[in-house]
Image 1 (cartoon, rainbow, N blue to C red):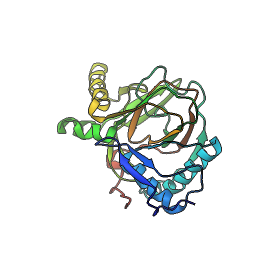
Image 2: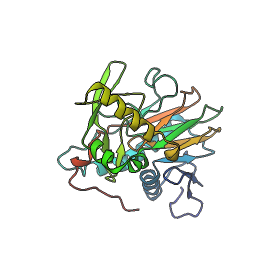
Image 3: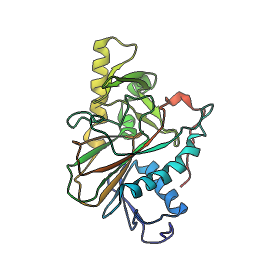
Image 4: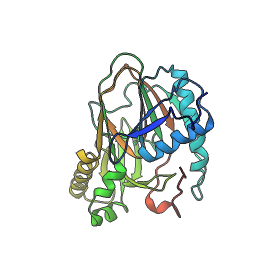
Length: 267
């Protein structure tokens, strides 16, 4: 069993704002609670974690997701006046759920409870590349007047007959950090704005959300596994049959004003 205190596990940043590579772990082996807690803290801080050289069955990948969900659920229960979500681990993504082409998106924002996190694994053949964009950094780079304005707005997301409304800026339920929560694939309009104004504002937000300064690109290699926080990043990349994918579901977005105070997890 791998212990969190062992010097073999290292976490190294891949981008100034987010994303990190974790080395020294075999995720197919049993991981003890301290190790999972360290990984969860790194997940919250970096939003995207890369593990190379992994060989996981879908069942082992689901067990890893379930261990992370077991830490998340009680933390989400801290939100004032809200019931904890019933977190579910879903293996595989049926055809048609992802947007066509390589549009930037966060998974399932057209649902009332978008995916909380995703784990994608390339066990053998090389898959096409993937890119991520940190929406916490994107929000921080907005001019202050625009940032204050969008914090009060909500947007409509739609895909294949599914429709949901979410805050344009969401509060991370564990850290309290703000992040942009619109994306070119699913966000259709800003509510309560004229169509032209909505389109112009969304164009500006999409540009900020996917600016080079907040993006990190990865070329898949056999054995790569990537875990990302769907609440904090967008991603893009054509779907690849070679990827084993597992989602953690069950997180309802809230605006920055929805919490009395942010809850911060100590590292």
